[in-house]
Length: 181
Image (tube, rainbow, N blue to C red; front, side):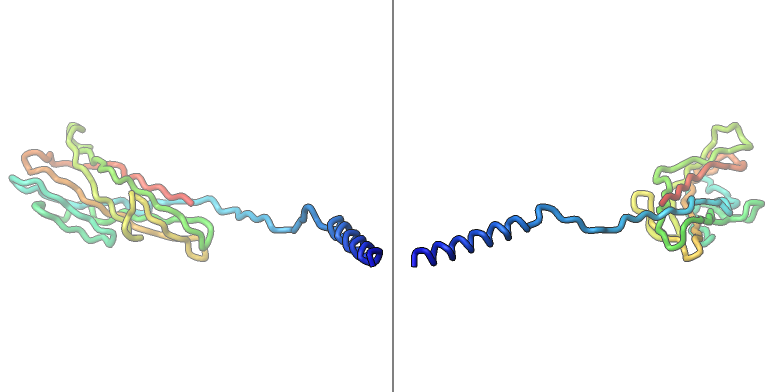
């Protein structure tokens, strides 16, 4: 009987060695590696941000707001017709279809400078808005349509000094807009 048990234990031990020797210490499985090549992103300004003709109030500073739908409003400033047609800034963007991109606008005010005066007269533009929605820290995400096209408009608030401190003239400045994947 002891011999039978010895033989059975020997067979079990031998099977254990065989099973152990056939166990794998590593395994390889194929997987994919992918990349997407995107078209270069492009940005074209199709119209400038224009606040139009304005007359400052005699004794109070005021503001002119140009929204992203080409509608302007004013507080303590008279809006008049002039050679400058009021309108929001407009942009077209091109890139890879159905891919998201980010629009970034400065959150810091920038100045318009009187180009017909001494060059020292300025008006600040602040509170920049975008037709794509509410900016978060100066940015918003949009997406290209299937053809790789998109567009948006930009508005803002012009701060006008009282008439005694705001020299008449044509004021100009630079609005910086950046787009990136």
